[in-house]
Amino acid sequence: MLKHSRYIAVPIAVAATIAFAACSSSAPSTTTSTKPAEPTGTLTVATVLNDQPALQPIVAAFEKEHPGVTITLTSADTSPYQTTLQTQLSANNGPDVFYTYAGAGNAAGESLLAKAGYLKDLSSESFAAKIPKGIQKLAQYKGKTYVLPMTVGGIGMVFNMDALKSAGLKVPTTYKGVLQLCSDAKAKGKVAFALGAATPSNTQFIDYASIPSLVYAKDANFNTEMANGKATFAGSAGWKTAVAINKTMLEAGCFENSPLGVLYPDAAKMVAGGQALAIVQTQGSIAQLKLDAPSATFQMWPFPTTNNPDDTYMASSIGAEYALNAHAKNPGLAQEFFDYLAQPAQQNAYAMAANSVPAIPNDKSTTPDTIAQIAKYLKAGKTFPYPDPFWPNAKIQAAHLSGIQQLLSGQGSVATVLKGMDAAYAQGGVTG
Image (cartoon, rainbow, N blue to C red; front, top):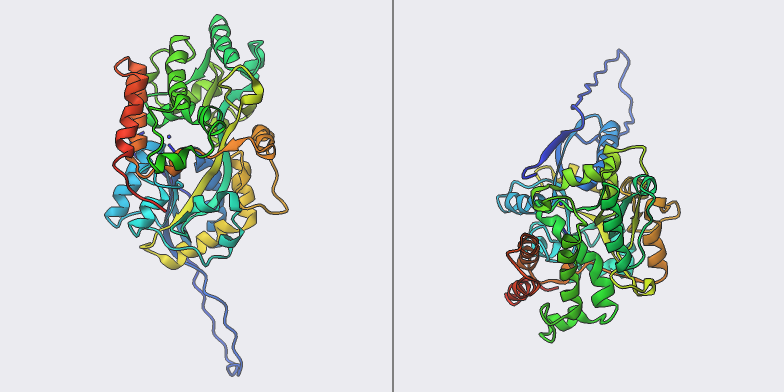
């Protein structure tokens, strides 16, 4: 998955050192007791911009419990995060603990990084056996577990419900309703959907939100057929429709003026401020929106691609996952923090802050109202994973993103987008 061209450093605390001294005139005791040494040192942790609000309190809590530890937390938009992480790891200068992605569909994909030897094998960790079967393979490479899934999330329309209500409009349940919302919002002086297409990763979400309904609901074996050479993007009616929706929405005035000149953070501020009613994004974007508008109400809804609400499925998969650097500068401390992150209390806190649910269920987890629709569709069995974890290399996603930008600029077409993705797919890559 894909969201600034540099990391944003977020120092959490300053290290404190406690020196103990003792003296006594009495004879030394014949018995001694030893306590485990408190961890000390520095640690680097990296995540994506949307998930930084969820991770930062956990980092701060760990530091408070371990006053000899200093953690530097960094975050960045998805596209620069992925390329920067790959560069850092290849130079043996990567963060000790970091956010990654299922599969091999982008430069920070777990399978790519595991194959390169950058990730520590976590198969023997206690949490590994507790990962639900539905997402187990997404956390693995060649049968071994390399990541800790933190949340299960989704992709859909994230609405500023206050702005929507103030405009006298409602959440659309059909594709016709989506286009009508664009028209009605414009008449009210509002933007229906902020896009922020200057951030390449933002151009993927309309497609990702559409593919479950248009492709997988009709052919659940599409990814296998692609892998076996029996299907292509260009030959898929569902993929053609999904890509075409971007152009149709642009022509219908659904987006802000010149979306290719707007970065994701600015698009998010439009939604938070009520200038735009919604954005098609991951559920993790809600945490970022809440930073700009703490009192506003945000909710995620499925993106309808047909005129029959019963045909709508949602994209849902691992929302956030973290890996342990196999070459961490402070491996003991990195492991201790990772174990802390895996505890149910931290899983629940992270999920609540990220407007999601814990990937590894526990008896105290809850579902925020903001993503009630994800829970509803999961329960109904009307979800499918994101497409990119099943792609063999990161070039496919790059072709997808650049292709959509060209489509929005008028320099490309639906056909060129899909042919470019097929050409990248044919180059093969990581399996397992």
